[in-house]
Structures are given as C-alpha cells and as structure tokens.
Picture (spheres, rainbow, N blue to C red):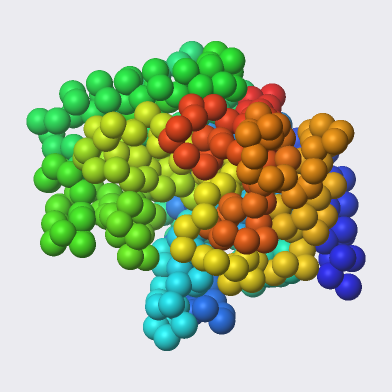
Length: 423
C-alpha cells in the first residue's frame, strides 16, 4: 500500500505539470499561511495562526507543481473542488530536526512555521503533509481559504529600504532575499558591502556563475538594536531583529533562529524564492534548511565556503556528506528505504540515486583509497553517521571546506533546481 501511495502522489503531480495556468488561478502576489507545529518525538499537531496577503510573488509562474519529491514536508494547494492541484512545494523545518533530539523525547514544544503560495483568485484548499520514516507523505492538516475573507492580513511591508542586485525578471529568475542580522543602523553600510562581497563569492562557484544573468539578490536594510548574535554557550545575548543564535540543539556551530514570523515579515519587502540571513559575526558557523532559510556569518575565515555550502542545503536539498556524532545509520534512518536527499544513499535502491554517474569497474561501496579519490562511487560516512550511509565522492563542498566545488552529483541537483526556478 505504501508503494501505491507514493506512485499515486507522483502521477498526480506529474499530470499537473504544464497544465496549470498561473493566470487562471492566481494573482501576482503572495498568500502566506502561518501556523504553529507542536509536539514531541512521537507526534505533532498543526495549529492555525494567521493568513496574510503580501504584495509580491517572486516564484515561478510556470513551474507551479513540485517535481522533485524533496523535503520532510509538503505543501499542496488545490482548487475549491479538491480535485485539481494548482501549486505544491516540498520543504523542511527546524522542528523536524528537533524531533530527533533527546529533548524531544521528554519535553513537548511548539515551533512557528510558515508556507507561501501565489495569491488565489478563488477559494482554495491548503494541505500540509508530513513525510514518515518510510518516505511516504501523509496528510496532517487541511484548510479551506476564501481569498475574500476580510481577516486575511493586508498590511503592506514598506518599513525598510530595499536594493536589487541583478537585472532578471523575478518570474524567470532565482530571487534571493538577503536579510541583515546583528547589523545596527550605523553598520548598514557594512551590511551592504558584506552582501556585495558574498555575491562575489557566490558567483565564483559553478553552476551559479553560469546562471548569473538569471539570479537576483534583494537586500532588505533592516537594522538591529545591537551588533552580533546570541552565543548561549558563552553567555552572550544580543537584541537583534531576527533573534539568531549559535548552539542550536547544543551544537556550538549550528546557527539558526526560531523567529520565522519575523523572517517572513522582512522578506515580504521583496519578491523572493530563497531567504539568506547574513549574521554580523566572525564566529564560525551557519545553517541551511530546505526551502526554509539559510544563515552564514559575515567575517569568519571560512565564511566564503560556508555561504554556498548552506545554500546547497536550503536551495537544492543537499544533505551533509560528513559524519557527526552518530555511529549507526539506524539512529536516524529507516534502512529499508532510501533517504530523500539526492546526494546520500544507503544503497537500498542505488539506481534511484547516482549509479548512472559511476564508471564501470568502480566498486560499490568504494574504498577510501588514493586511486578512487577522483572517482564517483559510494564512500561510507555521510548524513552524520559513520556506517551505512554513503556519499558520491571522497570530498565535496557538502562535506568539507577543503574543496570549493560541488561534486558531479550535487552539481547536477543544483542545475536541476536552477532550471526549475528560471525557466
């Protein structure tokens, strides 16, 4: 039955690709649905928070149906009959990462969440689905929305000045909103200079540099009261606009924020596909969650490498290819099915991953030997675990700061997403 469910999902999504006309169903602005997801390691519940109308739609008007099957969650939007899917996107969240922690086993918590979609002309049905350990999506929440409902918040986001870097039409471009964190009013010129420096880093990396004419960066000049970010493990707390902090889940270098509402409020000043938070700090660290947000610090010696590494997570759903704290894959993965991340595998269905890129004669699994260090194979140690999960090459931008390039598997995934956003 699980296989049937997955096949039905794909056939419905694929049949909708190319058949949904943006102008038939949508207006060129955004409907935002905010909610709270509460629960623990065993269960979660969605609670309605608010609906908002935002002035821009930065996403594609052509590719409305997600075709990648990435992410821990899935947003589906149907017309009022519930029979025609008119929009969908996969995504992940910090809550999904939290439920794998020890804390989630004993302490229920709630996390703020938010999804966006083009603003509908008529009534729609919003569905939120969770992916289970067997990689099957299950419906967990459904909401009918009337776009004429006068409780949909219509406040216009025009509090902060913005700047566009790039000349592409947002409807046919990858639009990246860059939000400042821990930059005071006196440091806004530093923020602008830092962003331009990081854009330079970004376009040094393939395939982004080849797609430069189709990528826009949008700066939202929103200052913080204090400079820097929270470092709880060192007793440092700052009054900043996005409430970022290190030591997420007790990992010193993991830089995140739970203030999703404020992130969306700032990003709403511009059209966007991705959100990048640039944190005014020299401390090493960052974070990237698929179709959620990216974070990186501005002044660390490795910030150039971290910037595009984290973007690999949030933009292309790439998994980390290093091992970090877990000895056995069973602690994180159901080993009877492949992980959804395109660049890690447990070899259960290697044909569905990157087997087509492996040269004949390369052994699978592949030994960490000198003769294979330039080959595509299946090297053990990835997805945070030492045993049972494999990565495509010996080293890659998604594994370490020692290389400035994406491996061929990650490169292909990034190109696929770039095409999806810029067609």
